[in-house]
Length: 232
Image (cartoon, rainbow, N blue to C red; front, top):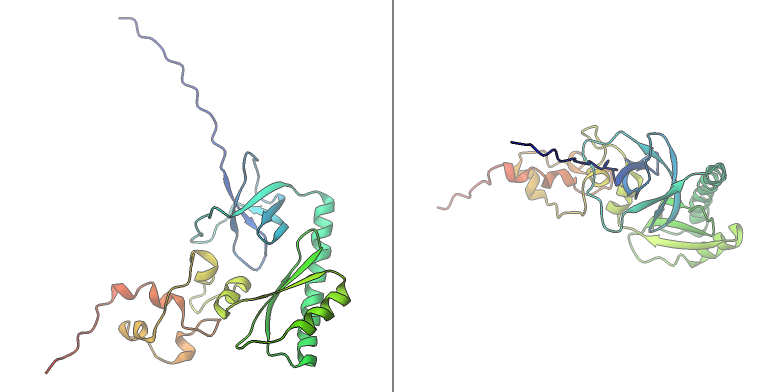
């Protein structure tokens, strides 16, 4: 019998998602690359809900990575020398604004805790992330910042847990915070979970960087049997 040879064409698969370091203090984030073929260490411009930023493609990934969302950042193009120069300038300005915000807050006696200041490549707006235990009138600070730096100032209030996610850090286990790596949302954590795992109830030992109960208390609680109450 004659055997017909069928030609099979295999199209090369281009990875649509790449890991990009936008903030050196935080783990890489997944970004949609489209049809761009990117290499480790290349500087690129990514578009996020907060604007356009310069990032670096990385081949390394944390132990666990968040699942990409539909509104995830996307890669626009390779960064030009002008983009990198502007990124460096905005970085210096971000740190200068942070220092001024902390100093001015003390002068105005505002009960605020600033987390971070971010400026996109356009430089037209500066976003100040902060938390406050109670409602605070920050408009005098906002006006001072607008007059001093001649750009639109946005004040965004975050919870302490969202602030820890934005700033990043290491937990008592020595790993990156759960909220900055794989957690998509915050779960309810109670002291009862620590009791069920026979952990110390000392607040200093079961609290995270945000000052709230550590999120990891909810991750393994189901592996521990629940103590039954003696009914007499």
